[in-house]
Length: 457
Image (spheres, rainbow, N blue to C red):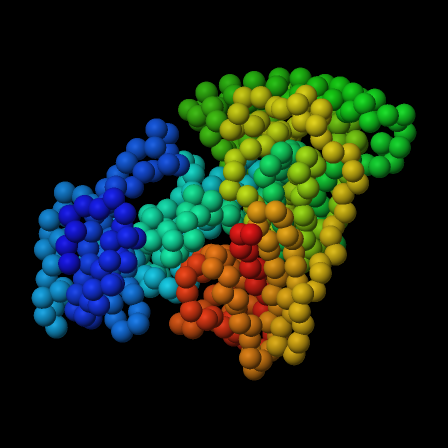
């Protein structure tokens, strides 16, 4: 069935399925997609194709281009008779992914360079980068796939998918330390997966998290403490600006863009040219500033729930999985490198509103445990929750993933798990559709496997 253009691809799909198409019928349709994540939200035209195979609804999506006439001819030929071209052959020829509507979608991450290392986005939908959905051979941008049937795939939350990513900081002190920042509305939770032994020989990393209660206890009031901390940051920012100005000259000399991430070896080479007295002053003022803050120890498996308005900065060599609200907002209090995404710090505003409550790592609540698995609550914010599932021996029956009517995000952080037709290795992730059948998660090996499960509330 050919629909030259539709305003609502999911509605067209529902109407087509209501006509009880045969296994040889193909629905193909064009529709306009607004790229809301790009400047100016430019529209593009997408082409989606569907084919039923028994109870399984296959689909694919890609950009409609000048070559679409040949595409449409092939698609039309699929529905004429048995033995003609299949949707699988079409996807192979055009390098489009072949997906199943009610089955988990494998997420293909995109790496985003940072001055402190990199972020690996599994559900990122931003101008800076787009995560993708893959069938293991080809892939398509995640927002394109969700636009095909947003109700079925994500219960209409296609623009509010929780951000799942890995924070992968460099293993070197200062160069691998993240921004000291706070959030007003963005909820974040970290699960530690690895601590670099070169950076932390005892295997215990750190996160800068809030403020040292002993230092705070030496002040008569919060206002006095905040004033002294703000003064320390301002002193450090002065020397930081001076150093960044000299490093910007090195960028210009070597043709490096002003706000481009730079490999650490290159940064070190530039730093070696700086006056020794300037570097000594920077280190002394940084230590004075950081003396106000607290460092919490982190080991693999630890969970960090970041309260709103609590300043925090993951430290070098500590790799974590992060789930967060899909909004881009932050207040940067300080950073021991040049900030590349904005030309200012937000210290004064952040200090005025920041929390001074002591921060601790949470004790996880066990929701259910039996011979097959243990399910723990990692965090329950007002907009999403995260659970940690430990699957015991492969002989155990596994875990039945509840049907909630919402999408879910799954990432394996230890071992390997299996779902029907899918194997998920460590640090691989899936988006589970909102409308789906029953799913059983099983361990694929003799040793325990751990998977994180996030879903909206």
